[in-house]
Image (cartoon, rainbow over all chains, first blue to last red):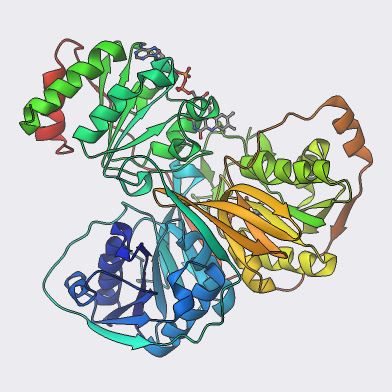
Length: 321
Length: 247
Ligand SMILES: Cc1cc2nc3c(=O)[nH]c(=O)nc-3n(C[C@H](O)[C@H](O)[C@H](O)COP(=O)(O)OP(=O)(O)OC[C@H]3O[C@@H](n4cnc5c(N)ncnc54)[C@H](O)[C@@H]3O)c2cc1C
Ligand SMILES: Nc1ncnc2c1ncn2[C@@H]1O[C@H](COP(=O)(O)O)[C@@H](O)[C@H]1O
């Protein structure tokens, strides 16, 4: 019996959210007095042995040609094979776009209970219960898993990465999966280098900015803070910004360390996607804007005056000219 | 082409979230129910658009729920779709629900199964993947665009920090989100027509649930906002740096 963590990659590099999953998996293993290993599929450019510092002893690396492209069906089969080899009974994913396809497939394949969107370590004092986010972050639920094999998909930014010492042993294997039925024809990256779902800092703006031509200052501030940019729904609906930036109940749900909301009223559907942020800063000219009730810090003022000042002030802090 | 669209009933996005029975049940008192927005706005409307492009397309809706889901199904039918199937069961276990949908899908022989990205209450984002695995079909999750020509679908899906486009042959399962279609409002004709569309009720197959909800909780309330003067932006930056340690 052991813990197995799925390591997700993009263009051969390990995603940050997978490091959270590794740390979490190692802590679950410690809690269950067992060991933790990991599985990675397809070609990887990063040094896998170095992942030992997240508490993982062994990494199963499947090298089948077909696994160089993501396909939930073949990936699920390969992960199932690794689970068998590792004799694992707790499987950990980071609840990102790929995991939202993989974890449920695996759950159905193995008849193993899945907790999607976990936010804390399992409670093993009486059975196996995991806390997860529900009602778009407005509440949480404790889910008890009744099956021998348990699958946990951990929300991004819900668990702190704590590297220690150690190296992992890499075990190559052939998953023997047949050719994938899905052919990936194109990959496009959104503007900016920080993926929104993984960003520590997010700078977001709403209809208060009046038009797409005013987003320069939002991007400048984001760049300074190494942040991703986001927006409210009417902004993406009006095509001022791409749909991929839309956060909220019907957009992406995020949980950054810092969320800066500029000219966003704070409608309940918007809050649903950002209320798991650790620190919320609101800049709005209306002191009655509902967003102030959900904020940690706020400035009542005109974004077109406040944001340029904020940029200057952050530059001072960071010592940039 | 035959499309199965999975629709679920969820509390309105502005519903007050509270719990009863010692925090083990969602408090439905005063809650307005709606069709889960992803199912209605994206999955169903995209299916309707495909039917508008090819009149031979047949759209069935499926929901797993109790009779109080019927008004929601009628509401979805008012937008479009030919008939609906309700599996008469009450469960919050994703695997249980997915097993019922997979059974309906097997019986109906669909080319395409559409789900929403997730339910806005239990946020599993799980049903589609489970249905696909149970049917041994490809699954494209979080689709933002879907087109079809000669039984081959071209689909764009969300990935971290971008999008990926792929090609897959039917049959397959797709979960749908923003970008797939523009939300529509049902018109009077649709509402009238929905009244006479068939709504079949079938009994569930026997399936063991894999998980159970043992309790709910609410996150701790915020301490309250600290307001900084608009003329003193430096102070905000200082607080974010020194107090919140966020920058
Ligand atoms: C079912 C459903 C789902 C929804 N899902 C989402 C979702 O996922 N995400 C989402 O965002 N919305 C969603 N909405 C829409 C939501 O209800 C709000 O309409 C939306 O969030 C408002 O966007 P906004 O704050 O940018 O615009 P507005 O509500 O128009 O607010 C603009 C704000 O900018 C302020 N402002 C104006 N000028 C300035 C200035 N110069 N400087 C500073 N502040 C200024 C104003 O005081 C105001 O508070 C949903 C709605 C429904 C019904
Ligand atoms: N009870 C249900 N009946 C029919 N479809 C459902 C049901 N629950 C969820 N779905 C579908 O599965 C999608 C994902 O749901 P979930 O995995 O619960 O987040 C939803 O958007 C619906 O399309």
